[in-house]
Structures are given as C-alpha cells and as structure tokens.
Length: 177
Image (tube, rainbow, N blue to C red; front, side, top):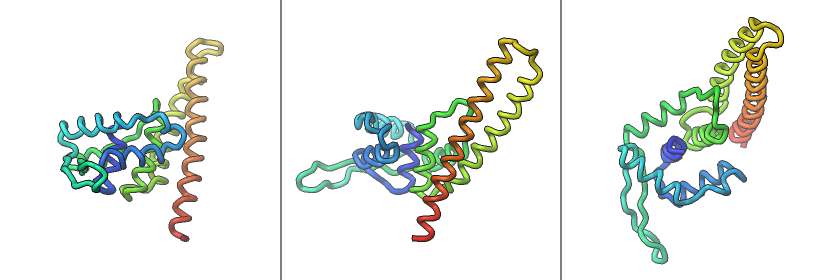
C-alpha cells in the first residue's frame, strides 16, 4: 500500500481523501473495502520515514484545512525502485494493478513495459520450474509440487497477457483521442 500511495503522489501533491478516492477507483470493486483511515495511517508512516512531507492547506469554508502531502526526493527514489521491481513468484495482483495505474496516471512508466518486464521474469521462472519438473522421477511428490508451480506461472502469464491487452487499448485510445 505504501508504494502505491507514493506513486499516486508522484503525479501531484494530494490530501488523504483524494488519494483514497483514486486508489478505490483504480481497484474497482476490490477497493470497496479500503478503509479511509488506512490511507491516513500510511501517510503518517511515510512522513515519519521521510518519504513524504505534509503541509497544511486552507480548506473551503465548509471544510476544515487539510494536510496536503508531496513526495520528498527519497520518496521519488522509492517510487522509481518500486516501478523497476519484479515482484514474482508471489505477486500481490492488486498491488501490481495499482503499480500499472499509478505509473500511467503519473506518467512515470509505460504500463505495457512494466507488464513486459514481469513477463520476462515469469518466463525465466517457468523455464526453471519445467526443467526441475522434468528432472524429477515420475509420480514423486516433488514432481507434483513442481507441476503446481508450473500451472501457477502459466496462469500468471495469461493474466499478464490480459493486462497487456487492456493497457495497450488504453494507450491506443489516449494516442488516438
């Protein structure tokens, strides 16, 4: 969650309420259960860590003043590192989706290129798992486990294909429209 919040702030400084709304929108139905308080706790932790700085901003007459958060140079470095990170074999699919959405929204990276980097890593791991599975004796417990790893990696690759199709379509619409 921290990295997604940082990446959202890379686009523009923002207050917690706006960040919460953007994250919920990016996650769709999966974001419905996101607690607004979680955003403020995350922002406080990021501020203590020196990754963001918060400044009071005047609010509207009917709203109290709000704290607007912006990235520090250390926060910008962490966002860049997060975008370059390949997070398999145990991906948090929601976090990866947020990475794509934040990268696109803040124009930090091309989501299709992020998907391609993940695909290269999965293909490397799939080749390793397939080699290991072939080396196991037929019917062994380890062989069954390796078969499960292969099937999981293949499913993840299919999901990345779907991500690439979706983000390519979004890019085409932006360029064409």
